[in-house]
Length: 137
Ligand SMILES: [Zn+2]
Ligand SMILES: [Zn+2]
Image 1: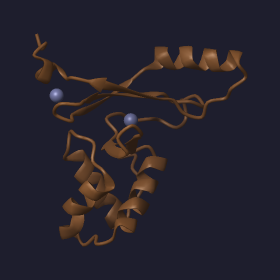
Image 2 (image 1 turned 90 degrees about the vertical axis):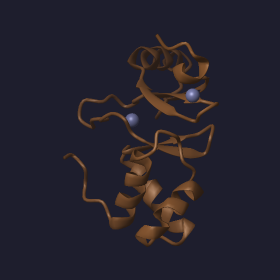
Image 3 (image 1 turned 60 degrees about the vertical axis):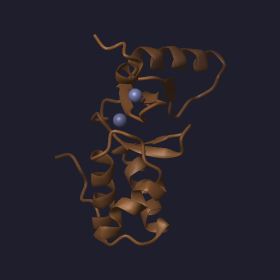
């Protein structure tokens, strides 16, 4: 539902990311999709490029790695800038996506005051997840 028809390679890469809670680099993905018939890094990069453009997958800039989107980023009613934030556990590698409308507004306001027009906002929080830090509950 809502997905454009994906090519076989795009679907393979997306499935691979969806099956992992951790961010994966292109080479991590390549290792996992070889069985599906993808042999060359460029095939992975092309699939990723498409998936990132359509926002089905996000790039974690600070890790040069990728995660499957945990939300639907609608196209119609989203403003020009759709902020995405990630918490990244440096112990176990689990990446979680959080939407941050409040932070997005603040960032947009700050940008407006300086005349800057942001296309996208990415917030990446590195630290320790509840499991690893033992702060659960
Ligand atoms: Zn997302
Ligand atoms: Zn952790």
